[in-house]
Length: 518
Ligand code: XMP
Image (cartoon, rainbow, N blue to C red; front, side):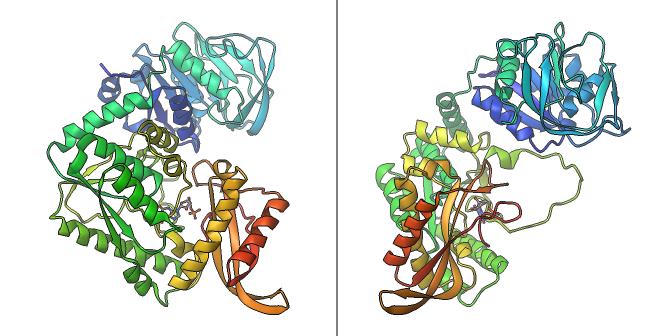
């Protein structure tokens, strides 16, 4: 028996499949996302799901070779919810008809609720008009036996269908996206109401289980953890320490490209407050030396990545090695995605993470966060009593300030940028905006501009401020500060940071921009 209720999500390649998992986890239900084609019967049965959700996807059921749900799920007497493509393949597999060639319906749509079912109970009343988010081309034209319509729209006569007896439901719309206002509640009706999940997935429960798992895996072995000061590696370190105490050593490689006071904070928190064995290696001379004269962004990233491995290995060798390497890998990195095209994606930037580094090392991996989403990692950090400055902090890239200094990186420029960044973040915190923003930082531009201060002419550096909202860093919108705020920040920067005489605000979204400048 599993200690928690579980739902299995079979992925057909939709861009938003992960959001189904997010919504379920938010309502206290443990779930996993598997590609539809790596779900053999034995694996499904061993998982013991209380229900199954079939995701959307880019294929068309009307094409011969299109994906199908494993037939066994319809023999297991389990509730099934099919979303968009999932609804269509379920309908086709159970004897209905799906046709293509209809007008594509994309974006916001209004459905009329024509009936009632377990999914809509207490949320959608018969006769109501409800807003949903659609994204589909094909549609069902003949329902499979036992199904009836619960909601319809002009473009989707079978917007929501139900087979009450077998507990099968299908939606043409996406309940998992926020643009379907009652979507999370509809999903909860499925998981809690229909499948009988109790919402027993809590961080307190996860903490106890994770600790037991770590102890079982590691035994008396020694573990090394690369600490970056970011949320993921920090939470992993504290969790590991709770599990195995002094068998854990953390290595913090300081490349000299951290934010102001970051290193002091890392040492203060982990060594002094949590009593974790911590090696703080100041390698700023080495990094800045090798970056000298280098201006190409990819080259900068590669140099930093390589040096990180070298320094990390050096420190690890000094320790006499270890049996395990701990990484703060998260669930989104683990989910094996269904590629719509089958082709490789283009490298926009070669990312590098402390956790993802030492590939050549002969250590086994411990990845205690690999079942968690970012917001769950934060919740776990709070559960572990970690300070809000760490669990609530904005993401910070592995290469640090180097990718916020276009052109050559020098210690002087890094010092200047740290000052600008400090003023900017201080103002953001004072205005109570820190938590509303995904990421905010300053960029030091490789441009000098003319200004006037007092009676004198200045010829100093320009900087850009960046702030974005995002849910996962994959897409982002610039943050719409009011002009009064921006004016105040610009004024403080130019007055308090000698060497900078001009401030600009970056209003590019992603895409087409990226969040970082390099
Ligand atoms: P971009 O600039 O690609 O950034 O839009 C998306 C998110 O990723 C962060 N980022 C990195 N994080 N190592 C990291 O750990 C990296 O090399 C790296 N490069 C970018 C960036 O800060 C943003 O949150």
